[in-house]
Length: 433
Image (tube, rainbow, N blue to C red; front, top):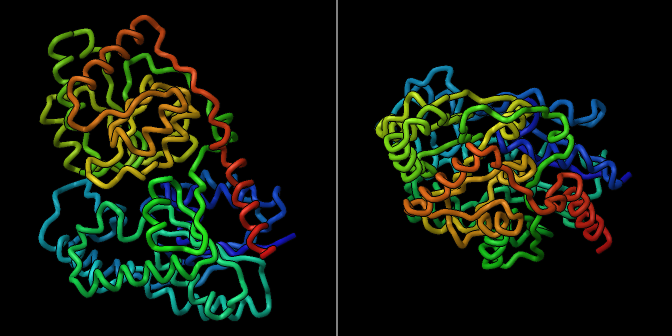
C-alpha cells in the first residue's frame, strides 16, 4: 500500500474544527490504497479535548510524536491566565482584552513568525529527515494553520526534492481575518508574505477549501492548485439519534468570536419577544461551545438572558445530535470585508442535519452559493434587519404549524468518504508525474 506522511499540529485527542479534516481523511484513506502515517506534537496546546474522534482511527495507524516547546506558559504568566486553554481567533470568554493581551498579540505577530509553533520546525525537519531515510513514503502532506507545519514540509522538500508535497490550507495565511489584528511591522509583514509565497510556490500542489481561497492563492502562482472542501461524515450522522426540540430553538454550535456577533439577530429577536408573548415563551437561543464575552454582552443588552442557554464545548457526537434536534441552525461567518471565500466546516454538517439554516455573512460569498445550491436557504447580510425579521417570523410560523422542515438537495459530494477519494486521486496523480 502507498504511504503518505501527514504533518498536523491538531490530532487526537484535540477537539474543535482544526482536527476534524485530517482525522476524517485518515479514517478513509486506506479504502483508496493509501496508508496514513501521522506526525504530530507529543505535548501540544489544544483549545479543547474530545475523545469521541478516537472511534474514527484504527488502532494500528502509526502516529509519530516528538516534543514541542511553545511560549504559552510565558503568555499565561504575563496575562495572569494560569491553567486556561489558549483559544483560537483571539476569543475571550471572560473579559475584554487588556493591554497585556494586546501586547502578547503584537509579540506573536512580529516575533513568532509564522506562529508560536515555529520552535518545532527545525527539530521536526531533523527528526523526519532521519525517519524518512530509513522509512520512505510516497508523499507528504502538511496541514495549516498553524502554518509552521508548512515550513516543516518545505524543509523536507529541500532534503527530498523528488518527494511529492501537498500543502493543505484549511484557512488563509496573511489573508486570514485576524491578520491585521497582529499589528505587524512592515518588516514582519514582509517576512510573513515572503514565507507564504515560498511555501505556495515550492509545494507540488496547494489544496484549499473554497473557490474564494483558490482565487486568492492563484495570485501567488502555485505549481498546482486544487479545491477539496470540508464535509460531513455519514457515520456521525447515522450515530446521532435525536428528536426535535419542543422549544423554538435557534442553535449555534462551535467557536463564536466577536467578529461573528449577529447584533441584528439579537435586535430582531428582542423585538419579536416584545411584540408576541408566545414567541418569548417559545424561544430558546442555544450557544454551544466557546463564545466571546462581547457576544454574551450583546445578548444581555437586548434582554434575551432568559432565552439563552449557554452550553460548554460538547464532544463531536453530542454536537451532531444537537444539530439534528434544533429547530433552526445558526451559521455565522464574519462581519468583515474580504471574507467571501470562507466556508466553515460546520456548514456541511448543518446541511447533513437537514434543519433550516439561518445564515449571516457575505451574500455573494462561497458559503452563500453552497446554501442556495443545496436548497437550504439564503445568506443574510449582517446589517439586513428587514430580511432577518421576515425569515425568523416565517420560520416561527412554520414551527407553530409543525411544518418547519427542509428537503436539502443531494449533498453527498461533501461526504468525508467522497472527499477522501478526491484526495487519493490527487495523490495518485502526483506520484505518477
